[in-house]
Image 1 (cartoon, rainbow, N blue to C red):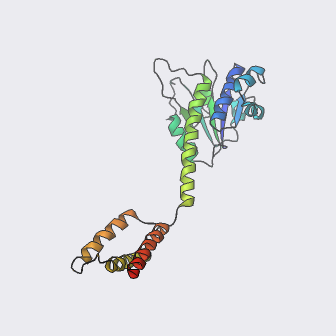
Image 2: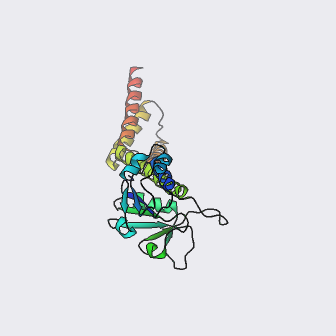
Image 3: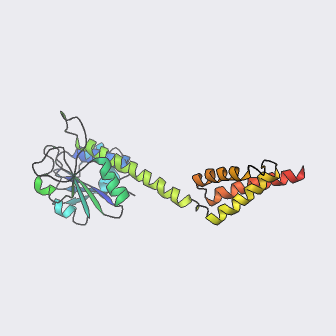
Length: 242
């Protein structure tokens, strides 16, 4: 579910930060890393800091400009901790995850992180559809680049898990019972309750009306209806065998 999302690092100075980002990505099941003009890469420190995520480093693509790195992407989101005089539409990591995982899972997405000391430049943000801001202590808002990537990837991972659970639930879900099936069930229920002596002629209508309200409120699916009718049949059989 996350294969359509690329993490893009622009002009990263320290190779160890690239390795730490790869580790953060692999923690959250993300694999697509793009590097724009890294100062030092490949490098042994990057591999060391990756701590087993060196496969992500090996598959990383290197570009000379941000334009090239995001050229094939349909949605570009730039991360920044600094306030800007120019106003870009802002988005939080959680909103970002909802947007790219749940609302637009078919789009190719780039999430761009800037330089360690100065972030993204305004002309680079001009390439972005949204400005991503991570909520944090206003008195100390500068996150290490790997920590920032970890926060964003975590939200993406959680959203993907929720989306997968919904998809599995929809796949396994049985269709709701039709009105005809419910009417047949109510007839069966009335007969079973009569057979065991629960129904009384003067109260049967009000009891059935209340039972209808209960089951209509639940909105039974076909599997649940089959279970209930099986119980009714067994109850009737036991009554006949007494």
